[in-house]
Length: 91
Image: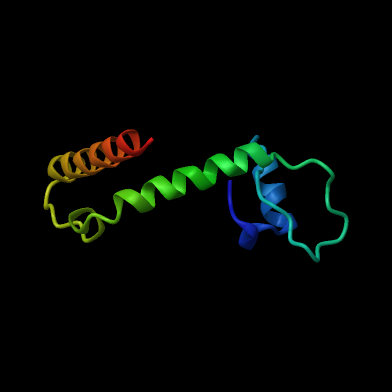
């Protein structure tokens, strides 16, 4: 799954040669656009990026202040937990 910046024919062909179904939207000015586009999969990509954006709002996560991978994982888990609590509380 990629954004429109990777919508070249070569990228589509490379993905297909590796056995991957490309979910890359086609540019508006592209000729011979295919009719089918997996819009629901692309929307899921957007939601995942928004989730990473929420977690990166925490300064310790964005700046990678933790020295070890274990501590960084703990901080990311804590930040994700706070995001989930906020989401559930406001829903």
